[in-house]
Amino acid sequence: TLSKTSDYTYPTSHDQNVSDLLQYARETIRGDSILSKEPFLQQILVEAYITSQITRLFRTRNAWMAETGQDLTYHMPQTALWQRQSDLRFSEIIRDVMGIYAFLDTADSRSPVEGRFERLQRHSVAQQNPIASPDGQADAIADQLNLGISYKNQIQRIPSNGGLPTSAT
Image (cartoon, rainbow, N blue to C red; front, side):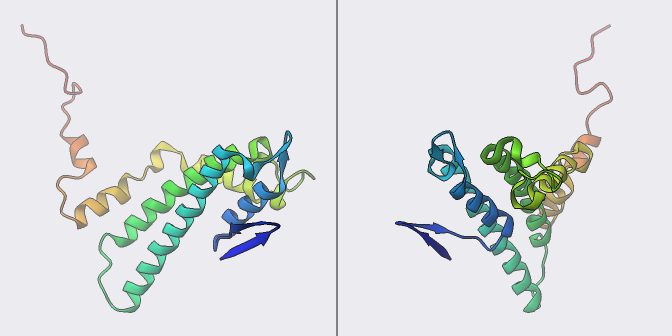
């Protein structure tokens, strides 16, 4: 859907966070320019919008397949992997657009959108934990598509010396 303000029509999103970020960029002036008029910010805002639409399509596909009784093989892990990666990227976009204001919580009167972006930033930090990597979803996708050895098996095959050549004695 589109919303019209003055002489320009802006996209809106089904994703409330993306809609809120687009609205923030349309209404916020930094320096002497509205954020949504900055070329770099326009590019990353469009990226956020498109990514949210792809996520919606993946979820719609999964729901349709489940409803029609089709096998969901790699589809659910693919959606989970996409969602995790797009959430991390969206957090970066929020920081690029909002700057330090992205970290303000509900206790601060300057906090946009009731502090929701601050909660997203904390969630992003938790998602960036290297122990919680997306390799599990990648392995599930590879297994379902019969693409060969999984990431875990590759790690187990590395020799104890890290694969470095041993010195001749």
